[in-house]
Amino acid sequence: MPVALMAGSWLDLYGNWRLCSLRNRKPFCSSSRFTMKETSPMLPSNRSRNQPRAVRPWPLSGMDYPDTRRKPHILGKLLMAVILTAFCILILKQSPGFVSTSVFSHHEPGVTHVLVTGGAGYIGSHAALRLLKDSYRVTIVDNLSRGNIGAIKVLQQLFPEPGRLQFIYADLGDARVVNRIFTENAFDAVMHFAAVAYVGESTLEPLRYYHNITANTLVILEAMAAHGVKTLIYSSTCATYGEPEKMPITELTPQNPINPYGKAKKMAEDIILDFSKKSDMAIMILRYFNVIGSDPEGRLGEAPRPELREHGRISGACFDAALGIIPGLKVKGTDYQTSDGTCIRDYIDVTDLVDAHVKALDKAMPTKVGIYNVGTGKGRSVKEFVEACKKATGVSIKVDYLERRPGDYAEVYSDPSKINRELNWTARYTNLEESLSVAWRWQKLHLTGYGSQ
Image (cartoon, rainbow, N blue to C red; front, top):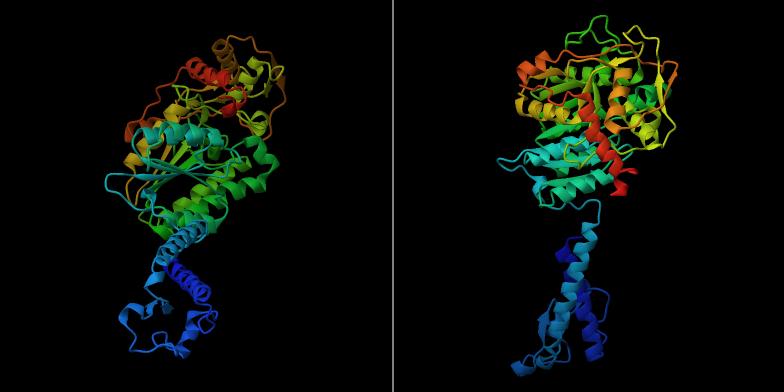
C-alpha cells in the first residue's frame, strides 16, 4: 500500500477513535470511513444549519470535528500521521521489492561503473583496488565462498566516499538475483573474476567446476545482454591450452585442456565467443599464468584458508612452511621432462595482472574480441621458485618430493608479445624473489588472514 494511502487511512481511524472518545456518540464509531456514505457528515441529525458558525462542526477526513475548542487535537493527529508515515517507509525499505535511489543506479557522464565479480578474492580485490585508485565506480559481487570480507573492509576504509564502492553479497548461480542486481545498478562494464580455481580440486569435484565457471558465466552474459551492458573483461587461464607441444604459448596455440578447471574455462570462452558473433559487445579475454605477489603497499594479500593450503598456489605453501605452520613444503612431481625434473611455470605478479585488466578495459572496442596471454614470458621451475622463497623469507624450508599431482603438465610459459604490442602492457615485477618478498611481508602481518589486523 502506498505510504500516503496508509497514512491517510490511519489518520481517519485515529480521528474516528478521537471523535468517539470525545463525544461518546455511536453513529460515527463504525469500522471505516467508507460506511459514512449512509449519513451526511456535514449535517448530523441533532444539529441545525442555523447554528452560529463558531459552534458548527467542521469536517476533517470525512469526520465531524466537534467544535473549535477541540482544535488543539490536530497536533496529536499530525504527530500520529508523521509517526505512521515514518513507520511505513521503514517497512517498505526492508521489503524485497523496495529499490532505493543511489548514484550506483544511474549512469553518470565521465564516470565508468564496473561490476567486479569475485571482488573479495585474491585477484578480484587487487583489481578493485586499482580501479578505485583510478577513479572508477566499483560494485563488488561475491558470495564469500572463496573471498574474504576483510578485503572488502580494507577497500571501504581506503575509499569511504559515497558513490565509490558498494559490496553485494550474492551467488552468481542464482539467475534471478543476478538479474535484480543488473536491474538496480547501471553498469558500464563487467570484470568477471568469480570462479573456483584449483586444478587438483577440479579433478575431485568436476561438476562443481562446470557449474561455478561455465554456467555462472552464462548467467552473467544473459544479464549483460538483457540490460545493455556492453563491455566484458573475462578472467581466463593458461589451463585452457593444456600441455602444448611447443613453447612459448601464443594466443594461436591450440587449446586442449586436460583437467576440468581448464575445460570449464574453455567452455566459458566458447560461449562468450559464440555470443559475440551476434552482439556489439566489447570483449577482452585474458588468459593468465601463475599469479604471485601482493599489493606493494601492503594493503591487500592472499588470505590463507583450508582449501588454499590443500589445492592452492605454491607460494602460500612456502610461506606456511617458513612460518612453521606446516613442517615443510611438498613438491609434487620430480620426473617431468624438464631441466631439473620439476614443473616449469610462468609466474606473473598480481599487480602486473590487474594493470593488464585495466588496460584491456581502456582498449575494449564494440563488436571486437581481444584474446591475450598475460605472463612474463619466462619459465621458472618449481625448484627455482622454492630457492627464491627461501631467500625472500630468510628461512631454510624443508622440502619433501612426492608423486605428480593429477592433471598437472610439465611446462607452461607465455609469449606475451601480442599484449605488449596491442595493449602497450609489459610485466614490470619480474624479479621472483622481490614479488615473494612483498607477499611475505603481508603474510607475516596477517597470520590468520585479514582477521589478524
